[in-house]
Amino acid sequence: MILNLDPKFTPILNQEQINFQSFTFSGGEPHIKIDPNFNTNEKVTITHRLNSFNDLGLLCITVDALRRMDVKIIDLFIPYFPAARQDRVMIKGESLSVKVYADIINGLQLNKVFVFDAHSEVTPALVNNCEVIPNHTFIKEVLKVIGENVKLISPDGGALKKIYKVSEFLGGIEVVECSKSRDVKTGRLSGFKVYEDDLQGMDCLIVDDICDGGGTFVGLAEELKKKNAGKLYLAVSHGIFNKGFEVLNCFDKIFTTNSFKDFEGDNVKVIGIDQLI
Ligand SMILES: O=P(O)(O)OC[C@H]1O[C@H](OP(=O)(O)OP(=O)(O)O)[C@H](O)[C@@H]1O
Image 1 (cartoon, rainbow, N blue to C red):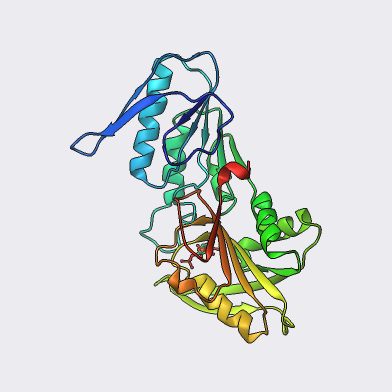
Image 2: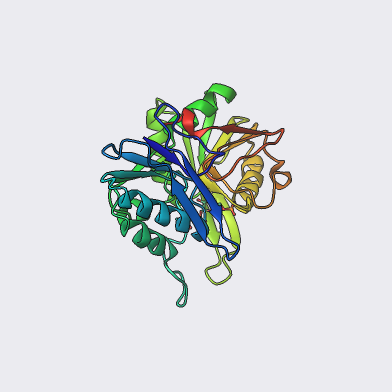
């Protein structure tokens, strides 16, 4: 049984859907009323694009409503885990935000929590019964569009372990390692390195979990071009794109999923999460 809290996001279609009504009170609080005409002895999977504390509020009251109907086993499918990047305290005074979300979700006593391409190993370490769905199938779908004659580009140390697993899954596509530096105090990017002298005109696919403002990828694209890269592609599991796609016009094509929100754009191909699980 599926209870899908985001009407525009239907990642699991091949199971019976539970009906409900939801609205937001004028004071901002979410409300839910679940249609009780379903078999409450069965497991319920809640699917949601949980991007903020407001979404978390709706999730919490939904789990409460299900528990009050005696539903015993509840799974959660949230492809994007909020604040997953805030997985360490860089300077005194910051919060460990990912743990705040994890602690609240742990309090719901869920059977399983499915997350797509978690930013780091911190999320599954903090979230009880967490299962991470890797980005392998996503990148396989990307290669169906651009072909396999590319180099996989790892933008930074954080992405390295994952990209070697993708490469292995795809039969050993060559990986180029890169790094970026950030100013700890300001958080600004301060430099990129590509650890290969000459890319010999080969097409390059940067693979990462999140594109937010895009600074990482624009900076890296400049370095790749200096090293004689051919066409440049970007594949990010979670597209936020807070500065739009214009800033990313150095890329021949951008690939993402609908884990965070829906997108449209000439140069963007969105691969639905429903195709990847
Ligand atoms: O589009 P942008 O605004 O450039 O952000 C995207 C980058 O941010 C995240 O990494 P982050 O720098 O947080 O990596 P870290 O956890 O390895 O420091 C993400 O993995 C991307 O690499």
